[in-house]
Length: 566
Image 1: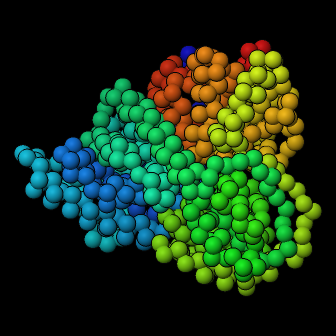
Image 2: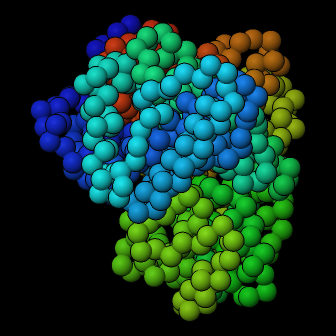
């Protein structure tokens, strides 16, 4: 199987590459045929893009020292956390503030210099390290921005070639996604030394500009393996603190009263806001990837967590403008705020946007609360509508016997995991149509914000087992993996022998690390859409196709027949 036979790829045109103000192709959106070269579709400007490139480069330099220090039992949690936060800050739709990114760069450089001194002082026969380890940040933001072009994607392609750069960037984006989950676990007090050690190992590996595609592919698959460890750690953090998600009916209609909308992914931020708003007459709504929070016992016990408003991140400009209250962004997914709500939207954690009020690490949400009280709120109750969520691995495996029996009896013929990131690009109606056409003797697992394409549709049940099982957030891909592995064990077969098909939508770097995790597990025949990542070169794609039989989505009817073996 070769690339040209199965994939239609956006044509490349780098004729203006040397004149580009920026060059970013880390997410599914892009302005031109290959990348965003003047201004990001996400809203990222060239200055911010340059700051992000430099931040990652300095993180590589810190990891060069930290990796060797780790090997000499000289670990330092400051270095671990700083690198993870740097990577997460550069995930799509997280930090758009070039000034804040520059401050992060300077802080990271200070840690890098500290680590260098420890290395030279404590490591026997310490040799001078090269590359990012020796990089000196510009003395001001303009000088730093100018440095971005010399270490960005185009410089890598020129120096290393397209294929090596592609494999390197695939690893980098996998690391960024894994860093997001590691940061979520860290804020809840859960850390894993082996995970942090891998970040330093992988970044140090990239800092030395590897050129062997086999070595790069092996490191990508190791990133997928470590990401499973991280997702398991985050699952433990979330469930230890908030209990296991349980099947829950969630209201998706508005309730009369003052209101705050919480978007992003962070459970701790939601909990702290719920505590600070108790008794104030303010209703709290989830949005986007926060929807699964309504199924955690220790969160849904708050009576003023009244339900979910709106859908996936890409519709926020319309939905936030219509929401009559305050809005809190807890992690990635922010878009450029419109004037109609820029004075009532707030950020916290790593997400930042210029001129938007940021709630610092003290987590005093008073400005958010005051904005909600000053807003009109919902003036009437809407007609009540509900959806059912909360089918994490604990809930599903609790009735695994019934599921297995239904499969053996022929009542359930096939499972489809239809999920992933949603986005604005045309073609994503494919996932709605696919879900609608799944035969009635099949079950759909879904996760992440891609579920908003169909999660309000009625699918019914099979012998009391809901045909649509909402597993949770994107990181709850871990739940889906646990469910799949339990089914494989029950039927005494391999994962690829199960009547299970993966129909995935991707958008940003967390989708990349989840894909790498599935590839690490050896999952084959994944159907990926709505388009091929621009950072995957034809030759690298050939390797993935030949090894894992990855295929693009095509038309729904053909894909369904292929999945069902018809």
